[in-house]
Each structure stands twice: as C-alpha cells, then as structure tokens.
Image 1 (tube, one colour):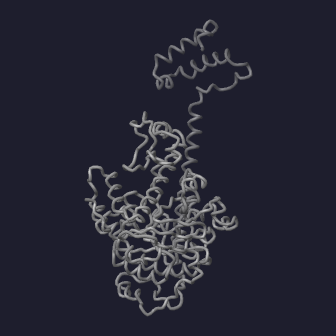
Image 2 (image 1 turned 45 degrees about the vertical axis):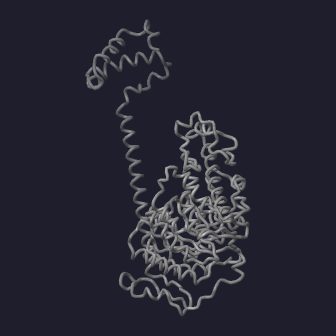
Image 3 (image 1 turned 60 degrees about the vertical axis):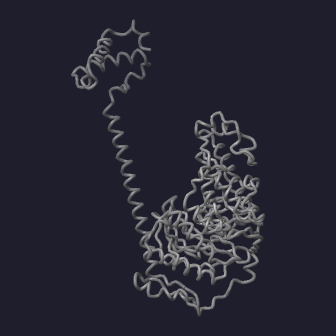
Length: 537
C-alpha cells in the first residue's frame, strides 16, 4: 500500500529501503547508519501517513529491546508462579502423608465385640503366624436381619450348568439377570440422559462414591432427596465404594488401617475415605445396592504379602461398614471378595464374608490386565464358593466374550466403562466383534450399524452418516454409545432366554463362531467353557 504515495515520499526513504534489502537484518541493526538514517526516513514516512498529534510517538520498529525486556519479565513471573505451585503441591503431599502416618500410628480402630480380627501392625512372619485366627470357627456372628433382607429379593428361575437366569427385586425396580450395568460415574452415563437410558430398557446403572462425594457432594444429594431425584432416574442404582480409586488414583492416595487419604484430583486437597465415611456417603446417595469399602491391589501385583494384607483388611473393614450402615431396610450392602490371583487367599476371604450373610457378594480385584487364563480360574473358583441363593457380581467385566464366559461360570451381574468409552472413539459393538466407524471403508456404507438392532442409531441412521460425524460432532459419540449399550443389554437378554429355554450351549457356540469365524478360539475361552460343561467343537 506504500507505493501509491511514492510521488510525495522523499528520495532518502527509498535509499533507506534499498539499504534494508542490501543488508542482512543483523547487519542493518549493527550499521552505524541505522539510528540516524533509518529512523529519520521512517519518521518522514509516518509524518505523511499519521496526523500531526501522533508525530511524537516512537515507531514500533525502534522499540525491539524494550518489548523484549517486558516479555522477559513476564516469563520470569510465570516461572515463579509455576515454582510456587510446585512448592504448594509438595507441601500438600507431605501434609497428606503426615496425616496418613498419624492415623496409622495413633487411631484406635473399634473392631467390635467378639470379632476374631486383632489390630493391624504386624508385618511378614508376625502376620503369617496369626493367619489361622481368621477362620475362628467358634465365633458366632448374627445373620442379617429379616428387615434388611426385605430390601432385596433374589429368585433363580432356571440354570444350565453353572449359568443361571434369575430376578433381583430391588426397592426401585426389578432386574432380570444376567445383567450388565452401564457406568454413570457422576450420576450420568456420558453423553446420555436418564430418559435415553430408560428408552434403551436399562434397569440399573452404576455410580461412584468418590466422584459423587466431590461433586455435587453427599450433603447436597441428601438435601435434594438422593441421587434418584437429583438425576430424575426412577430405576435402580448401584454405587461403588470408592475402593477402585486406590488403583486408578494410586499415585494420589495413601492407605492405612483407618482408611484411605486421597489427593483431590480437582484441587489437590486431602480427602479421607474410611469405611464409615464411604457408607455414610452411600446412605446419602440412596443407591439400591451399595458396596463395602475394600483394600484394592492392582491385579498385576504378585506381592503376596501386600495382597494378603489387603484381603485381611477388607475383612476387618466389612464389619465397620455393616456397623455404619444406617439404612439396611432400603439399601443392600454387598461385601467384595479380595485375594488377588491366589486361590487360597480368595477362599479365606469368601469364608469370612459369607459368615456375614450379606444380601449379595461381589468378586473384586480382577479385570486389571491380568492373564485371561488366571482371570477365568479365579472367577470360577470364587463363584462356586459363594452362596447359590445370593446374587454374584463380577466387578469391571465388560468385553462381550468375557460376559459370556463369566455367565457360563455362574456370575449374574457386571459393570464396565468399555462400551461407552469405546463408543467415544467411534467403535461400535456388533455380533461379529466391532466396527471402527472412523475407517474410510464406511464412507459409502448406507447400512445401519447392525441389522436387526432397534437402538436409535440403527433405526434412523447409516454407517456412512455416523462416519461423517465422528471427530466433528458430539452427536456421533451419543449415537454410538446408545448402540453399544443396547448391544450389551440385548446380549444379556439373549443369554437369559437361552438359559431358560435350555439352549445355552447352542447360544454360546453361535456367539463364539460369530466372534471367531475361523474358529481360532482363544485357549482360555475353550478351557473356561469346558469347565462350564460347554464344548465349542
């Protein structure tokens, strides 16, 4: 735009302009003519292009060092803020560790009258010498009251081998098992409304005590009338105790006999979750099934001493949970079996938990990346030792093949984030396995995700349309999430019907053939189903 003013510009300007092109930029700044020549001619240009009252302003080209100095000071301030933030985090971490250490050393843990569990503090050989005390056959424990049993009724209608079809009657609704429970960590299944979940014929969802205690908070939920009213959900809810966060947030927590101290992942403030506090929050939430706080160790650990310590602590904590439970006539408290991948530790835990005559039992500490061969063996070992007249819940199981195998081994209930999380990446579950709808092969595929599926995505939209939405519109994850949940629930219904009809082995063989058309079945699947009296030949 400067060339239109060329006739009125002084010739000295063009001399400077030519000079700027003949010299490299560093040489121009170091040239003795730069302050005297270039500034004079640029001032002349600005005098032609700006009103007179701005002539005294220093052109921006002449202030590089002042600007650089200001940027440097801003950068130093940011660095100092980062350092201060780091120091604050370190101080909070030290405070949380000190608090946990103080609880470990000074708190007196009430274990209850007549209970067989001595205080903790032993390590190594000391713990091994008292292992036998966990059995204590002479201790008489009172069974759950009749009033407590009224909050849950469980009836088995049919069995095939170890698999069973049953009905679970809870305060808000009936649940037909086997059942998969979608995970709504903070009172919502990601991307879906409660009305959408009802339309998918979902009768129970899962929430998380730790996350709900942070937001919106136990007191707030109690004041509102519980989580059911808060989210306008008229069906059943199961809440996890917060124990799983000992694994998922292991770097942010410290475990002691009193409980676990978490570092709030939102503002890094310390949060103490004891068995009593966990049950109190779950009472405030008002879920139909609540879980006991357990000491959870990652399934990948082979530290037997630590796993045994966690198992014994889980047994001690269950009595504190039952003592703190103020609403047994409205909410069902399930203990959780721990013991890692060691069958003998699992057996000790099961024997002790069964004495409490709880409404139902969960198998915990699995689905964390352990060997599938060990996984199915522990599921079978635990399920066959739990009471046949109580529901069995295997926590964290959600892969379709795993659901079929575990149902064949005698499990009734499951939960997992898998179908909703994988949906957000554009992966849809189908009878033949899964479809990565983001792939270019679906660009011109005008079929529904799966023929015969009655979910909103399959009834109204094509693979090509959803392919176009993925990565661009939030509606893509909503549609695929609806489909994946519908798929999981339909799989559960089909297994139930096959058990009732006496055709469960045929159903399993057809399902596995769809998943593995070349019959290259994983060995762990073949071995597990053989133990469930089903052959894939």
